[in-house]
Length: 268
Image 1 (cartoon, rainbow, N blue to C red):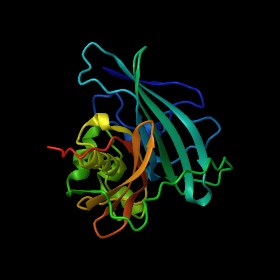
Image 2: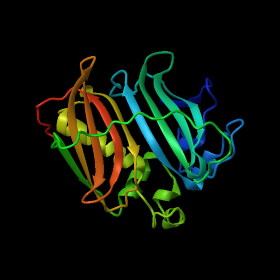
Image 3: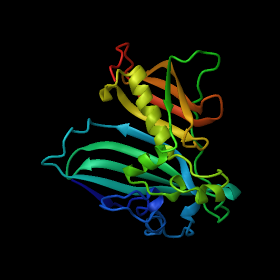
Image 4: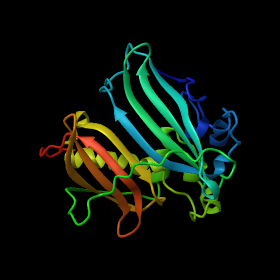
């Protein structure tokens, strides 16, 4: 059993990540997004929001069954940043923990509200960049082909943003129609790194992050290139990566992971 709770340290929980939470049925994405206002911050239009950047730290292996356990998703707002004409960033943290016990993962994500800035808020801190090495052949390459149905299938995870289901929202935002969930590209890249460099063993991945650089259309082929940097932190090797549409634009930039790289080939 998983229960979603809000806890306040830097601010209340926010609907920037308006997934289905513990609801059993399809939810109204826009209504959920506006359900929990943030004090002293304008009300933003969730019909013009996209992913900015996400990171996750795996603190403890997640058990294969929830039998006899109760889990909580604890969410809070870390900051709301005014980026001027470009828009506003809402940064949130979500922790997966066993009730009264261990914390398993800590994820930080940013929602970018397009064209909704200039309200006088703080600009926010500058981000650290992790560019791939120049002139070096990637140590691993992972390819995944999406289909016209991929966005509708991925929607079953509980993200009911109409941007990924019908053409109208994406057309109004200048994307030319429906686009893939940013987390599809993000999760696919993570799976690709684990498959090509980690032997498909989840114990070989400690941290993972990437910035959403451009939208992906259903039917695009995604190519992830990864480089082992050779630098270690507490026994974990730094890996940097980018994901692009085959022959075209970069869709995930600033990619970085901490892994235990292995020469054992995945059977998956």
